[in-house]
Image (tube, rainbow, N blue to C red):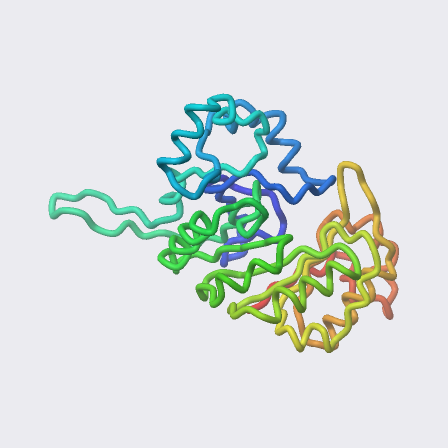
Length: 285
């Protein structure tokens, strides 16, 4: 696991959290994807060296025969094609240390772990049995908090209910994806904390208090697109924040919104964005 700079991926004590990638690669095809850029540059050789790809036939013996006939497919040229890293499954598991009396549990601090930020745990082309192995580890490691975020809300229902230490979220960018996130995904699942991430926010969402209450969302993240930068309209942000406030839901405004919002933070009747000392960056309990 690695330390992360993602603002909202924090440990329960408020310090910076971690990322964990037992699965990498994604077929969602988002043009703004930072993970794809990394996979095709700095991480390319490492990812291509992993030939643990999704089954082509559903049967290991048939797969082996297929790859013997077409060996070039085993070295799939896309480093961002889904790949499984089973050796990473144990990374969040509490370790034991050796003493003269034998093995004793080594105390661990509770961590906040953004799971599969280099993939989509519930994404297109990710085998269900890969996802279930990851969820089994999450359920076992109940000391930690795991952040799960997907762009495929329709796939969440098959894994519900989720472990209590899993915060389950869906990414939305505008009106249509907001409706899918809320009513195709989050409304239909059981999770202790359900959240929606408007990052990047690319259009008006038309979200309201009833949407949030009906789907039992507890947390909303809002952020802008970067690389290339696309600033959302302040009205889009305000609409979401107002709906959250009416529903009593916590809001996390990412730092990349500061240039957009800072001029308004000193105006008393616009103080819902934050104050002169910083943006609103709240967490559910």
